[in-house]
Length: 233
Image 1 (cartoon, rainbow, N blue to C red):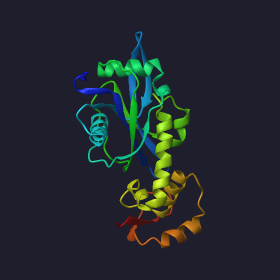
Image 2 (image 1 turned 180 degrees about the vertical axis):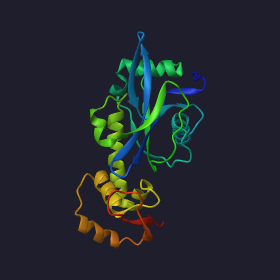
Image 3 (image 1 turned 90 degrees about the vertical axis):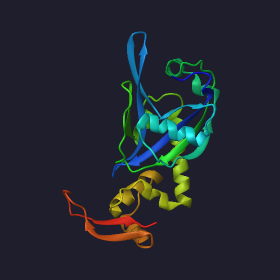
Image 4 (image 1 turned 30 degrees about the horizontal axis):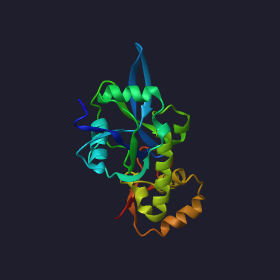
C-alpha cells in the first residue's frame, strides 16, 4: 500500500483519454465507490493518482493509467498543470484519497495528460471497488465528477482541438483502421463543435494525400454500404 516514504502527496497526474465510437466522442472515467458513514457513495473521476517520489511525471502517467485500466503503450501528451487551492475543497475527495493512499493529503497540484486511442482497446479491471468506462463528452458538464476533473476534461478537449489545427493526422488515432468518410466527418465536427457541409467536406477529403480508398465497403449495415478508407502515414 502507498506510504509517505514512496509517494509524494502533493503532486498527482490525471489522464484524459478520448475515444470515438463512430458517432460520439467519448472520455474514459473511473467509477469509484466511497464508504461514507456506512453508506456507499458512487461518483466518477479521471484515471489519476499521486506520483512516486522517484519517478518521472511521464512514467507516473503511464503507470497510473495501466494500473487503473490495464492499458499499455498509450501515447500520453502532457498539456497543462492544475493547482488552484480550490480544487481540493471537497471533503469527500480528500477522505477518499487519504483512505486510498494511507497518507495525509493537503494541497495537490496535478499534471494533466491527454491521449487519443481507438475505442476498441481492451480495458482490464483489477479492483472490486472501481471500474473504467466510456462516457459521452457532451454529457460531462452535467455529471458529478471528483476534484476539478470537469475543467480538466474541457481543457483537454481545447488542447486537442488546437493540436489538430497543427497536426490534423492526429484525428486518425481515434478512428478504426478502416473507416468511412462519414465517420471522419462526424468525428471532425464533434471535436471542432461545428457542422460541415457534406459536399465541401468530401472535396476537402479528396485533397488529403494520406487517405487511401480501399476496394472494400461496410458490412452488416442497415443502409447502403459506404466505401472504406484507411490512413497512410
